[in-house]
Image (cartoon, rainbow, N blue to C red):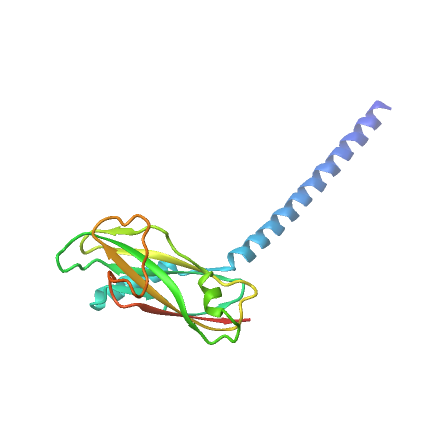
Length: 191
């Protein structure tokens, strides 16, 4: 009688272990699918942007550029792009640089579309240091919310410079310490 009880208990234990392994496998497959969906929400162009910007600085006299300059976006997606600054100061001085982004125009019919689009932008809040002849990159993150209205949004990307660390910098298209001309960035939002 004891052997029969031992056999039933071990058979029950084996079934419980198999059931737990099956549930664990299903949970892993489900989590992997969720992670793939989450990663599909972000378009990270930083490495490609840095390569393109480095080529731009090699092939032209430009000392400030943004890549890409135009991007189609779906609602609920995030885009990470880059601005590049080449410190070609004529006096060969080291500089501090800050990049700012501001929505200046939109063809969206929604009221306050420009102001709303400014809330989509995340930029570093500190200035970057660049030795003479160095290139620094600043990542720009654009989060398009799920309720964003369709349309084209034109952003001005500007860079300002300082000889010493500015602490909490401000930089607009009207600043007297602009490093170069503003760069346009067009985001087209569609369904």
